[in-house]
Length: 200
Image (cartoon, rainbow, N blue to C red; front, top):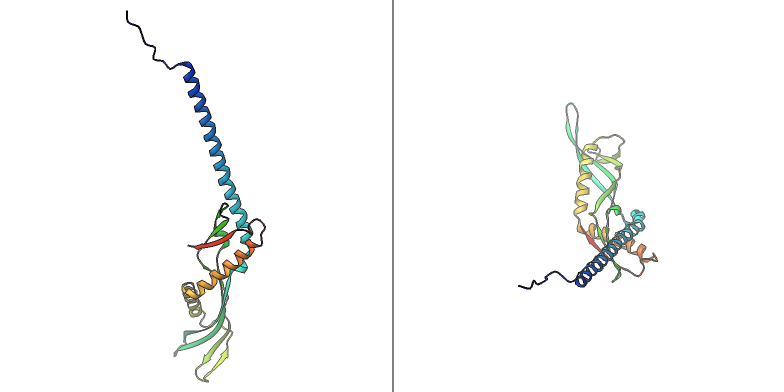
């Protein structure tokens, strides 16, 4: 009669495998929990740092004051002539600090701040308007809305040109970086960190 071989796994080995699986599951669970907590901590830190930075919006802006001349057409029943209007205004440009992205490296103690695009925050209504009187060959003060359509177009073109001006962009970045870095260096939790900037 043939002897049957029992190929089933010995009970002791089965228990060991079960214990190993349980231990591995526990380790994986702990690691996942730690990673989630670490991620949540980084998010909370970024929110905290962002909350510290956001109130200094005004300190990161750059003002550009200028005088300009707009050429508008002045029409009457019989005549059509050009009107030269001189005016002054001020553009305020900067970054929306509520849109910054913060990446903190706690090991190397580095905070990298990704800045949004430079934008026009405000543009003053033109003031000190004067019109050139071609007949008298001199400038006279005006209080009417003459030529305002042309002035508004010229102001929009001024904004577009300013956002492409490399010198102005460099000035705006330097202003923002100085204000943000100074603030973080004065904050106990981040004063030992190196602050770097990237731009979209």
